[in-house]
Image (cartoon, rainbow, N blue to C red; front, side):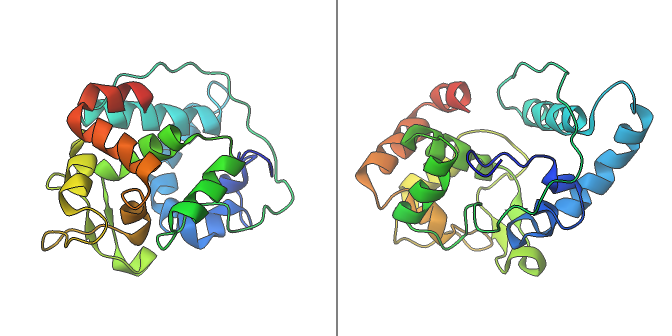
Length: 194
């Protein structure tokens, strides 16, 4: 919405956030979910389907069980939102804070949301980076934080894995790294905050 980072449905419309570099590859997830959207048109909004898919996928991968309820409204095409609000792989701690504070996040929430890197991987064709953050990129746990504490802000990631400059930035700042260390030591604390 320009103030909090909410997309106002721009991620599902051409010329919206879906076209931003930071969302490169989002079309793949959208295509996977489209049959569900089509099947439940009139019963669930597109936003509901996407939110439900996120909640279920986190749980299926071993993450926390999160409450979900329907009722999100889909909106039509809105005016173009400026690119640059999303975190960038090269962001330092100051830039991460700027982007996330704009959306109303605290330092703890910045780190908790970064924990989504515990699953998945980067693809060179989409982001310019290649590799997974953890040994098991299909398991939702605190492995991202454990690995981040192990390598710090300057260490080397294991072969076939990576830590982006924006990940390492979490360890370069005392306030942010305190949350990283807390989540590395206590998976349930991470799950509660996520």
